[in-house]
Every structure is written in structure tokens, then in C-alpha cells.
Image 1 (spheres, rainbow, N blue to C red):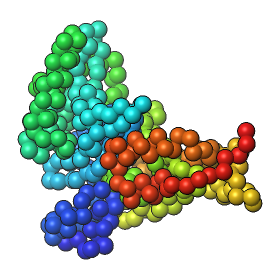
Image 2: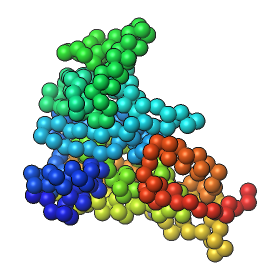
Image 3: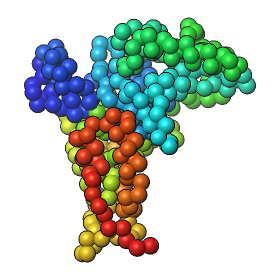
Image 4: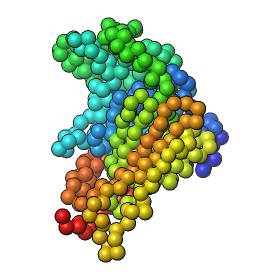
Length: 342
Ligand SMILES: [Zn+2]
């Protein structure tokens, strides 16, 4: 059974609702379990392909929470995201377009090789992997009817473009076989990184509950590194020590250790006149890794030049996406800054 302190930690790490966590605390032991190899692979492929940090949304990277259940993991998606020039789009639709595989007529593969829609029910859309039979990921957000509509529309659009939808087949399609022939190390590289990425997905709440960044992006750099870039407002303290502490917490943190760290915080302060330094641009960088496995997580805590010209737009986008006002007050406090000349 989980204590109140454990329940608070579960909320901090997973982003899951306090109500659900309290209601189910009796049936659970503290801590976040590590995925098996099949499950880690689908979680890795999901997070690395969905690229939710490309836009502003209600939560960093458009994911509110994850919930690890017996035999599957649920991922709670934000309803919408705000792209360039304030364009609003359905994040579930965006996720399907990025994830579901189809063969383009020149033999190229789009989407995640081997990903399949197993079924849609009142919980959400259930995804499986041909190459990892025990893998099971459920995307939660839209109603079953809306998921069905999104999949049908995507099927229609892909077919109309002369491409072949593969997400409803039992076996690999032609484009997937060709992809494997072209990238023979695909499975090996993905398997190497997958536990690290899955560990991050299972703790997706941290970017919302702990980070002080108003903008969060991530990408894979090569086969062994995942980079997370956090942008902070000038004057807002990056929470890197809190992150490092969460990563070291037994039972709860991902089993990672600090490989390298560079801290620029001493030069984040303004000068004696209260003005920020004119060439202000700071980055503290932390690298975490598994002691006995490949894969590096690099977190860049960045603070840009002090200016307030684009802040109102960022704030408007986040508000339009439904971001929590208390969180906005923390990551984008309203202020007036003195912008140095030149
Ligand atoms: Zn620092």
C-alpha cells in the first residue's frame, strides 16, 4: 500500500490525477516499475516518434500523464496543441499521423515500423507491435467514436495519396520488410535506448510538475542519446538540482546516474544595476546514463537573451491550449524587464 508521501511522489513523476492515485493506492506498492523488453520498445518508439514538443500545448510535449497497468501502459494526450502562427490542431490526430505506418509508393516507410491498431474501446486506441507481441500501449483522450473517425479519415487520406496503410495488417507489409533490409540494425539500436526512453515516458509528469521551463522539446541525437531542451524565462531558476534529486530517488527515479554536468547559474545573475548582461544566453547541461546499459539522456536547461517581445505570444498560445494558470504563473511570471541597448 502507498503512503500519502508515496502518492504525492507518484503524482509528481507520472502526472496522473491525485484522485485516481488516492483511490487505487491500496492495490499498489510504491515505485515505478521498469518495463519488460517488448513494452519498453513500444514506449520508446511512441515517445521518439510522436514529438509532442513541436508545439505549445496544455502540458509540456502534449502529454498529461502516463499510467502503468498490468500488461499495458496508458498515455493521456492533451486535446489540442497550438502550432506556428497560433494554428490549433487536434493532438490525437497529429499523433496518429506520425505513428501509424504506411508504405509510400516509392517503397519508403512512413510511421513506426510494425505498429498496429489492435482495437478501439472506451479507454482509447490500443496499439501493439508486430515484432514485440507483449507490447501494449493505450492512447487516452478522445472518445471511441472520435478515434474511429480519426483512423478512418487517415486511412482515406493515405489511400487517396496512393500509399498503403499497414496499421491494420497482421504481419509486416512490403515497405516494412524493405525498411528492415535497409536498416538491419534498426531493432538493435532501438532496443539499446528503449529502457531509458520508456523510463522517461513513465515519468512524463516531471516536465510539468518539477520543471520551470515554459518550452520543452526533445529529440533523438544518433542512436544512443536523447536530448531534452528546456527554455526558461530570464529570471526563472532552472530546476536542475530538483531533477537530479528526482533521478536519484530509490524506487521512484529512473535508475540513472549523472555522467556529466555543467552549471552556468553563477553567471545568470544581472549586473549591479539590475540589468541583464547584453550577451545573456546561458545553458546548464546535465547528462544522465544507466550504469550498465547504453543510452544517454542529455537535459539542456537554457535561458535565452532577455527580451519580452515574444512572451505575450507564447503566453497567448499556452492560454489558448488550456494551460493551467498556476503553472503559467510559475514558468511565465508577468514582469517588466530592462532590455539592454543593442
Ligand atoms: Zn545551473
